[in-house]
Length: 400
Image 1 (spheres, rainbow, N blue to C red):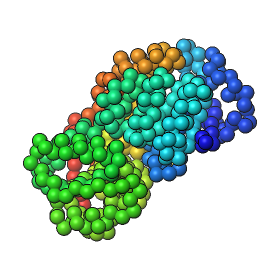
Image 2 (cartoon, rainbow, N blue to C red; image 1 turned 60 degrees about the vertical axis):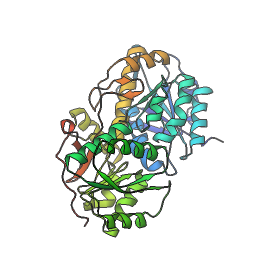
Image 3 (spheres, one colour; image 1 turned 180 degrees about the horizontal axis):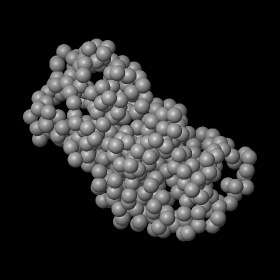
Image 4 (tube, one colour; image 1 turned 90 degrees about the vertical axis):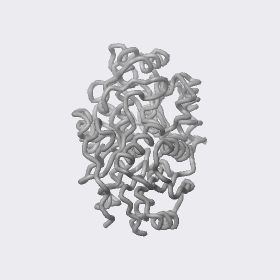
């Protein structure tokens, strides 16, 4: 059974939830020339994926639709049409996510789709979108395996594991780091990034003193962190998702594990991390690629998001999510809603985004290199590579 439908009919600055019961005739118009452009998606509102999805993706979908509709609608072959978002809770379940997208693309025949959260869900949905012929611009799919599948309709906005881990290792080498310890999540994301990290380390003299995996939903990492503390590495690398990123950081502080460089992957870029860790964010590094200093457009987006939701967008995937929406909008403005034409437009052109120009080689974002960010003075600053940095890398201060 599919989760209950939640439609967002957004016109101007007004948002109506559950509008199907109020004005069913609006949705019956389908894709007529003056009717709404129906855009469907399944996203985690509940379950373990929700912590990321409700920061990096769905708020951006809502803000984008609101802004486009406030400006008169999405331009389709010279006609501005309102956006109708049709969103479902996938409950952090891959099977539910796949069945929901199959319904949206198969029987509902929405005009466009927006991606789900995370590498695992995108790995499952991308072949389906390719079969139905729907371009999928994914801002949270960190998987070289997905890129290597060479799905013509799939485009990944995020820098892939080899780029992200390569940038991290380059940065550690530049700081004369000699020893590290690693924890990683035992899933597609964790395993691919762990493999990419190992490949990057092979080119260096850095010694790995300990490496440990952990399962999704882990509740206690303290024993592992105590062992690593005793090894006294120069750097700790956590290939972690949002709940575990906070868990690892909090428990490292509790056990007194305070290496010179402390890296935790996904979630360090979230305001939640700053809220929970407070002064102990200072000097922590992780996956980030932009902030309000990246461009004037990035600052405008950052401020609009913060004003609407009362919380900041994260400094990694939120920016990529917004860039993906910008690309989709620009492509629709050029070629309309013919999905094959959209795919060609996205695949063969460069697009202006808040992150800078983006073009794709196959499914991969070929424009943005691997990056590392660090909390400094209340902002998550890009510190590597130097040509994209908004601040200089600093050694981590001691936990307070």
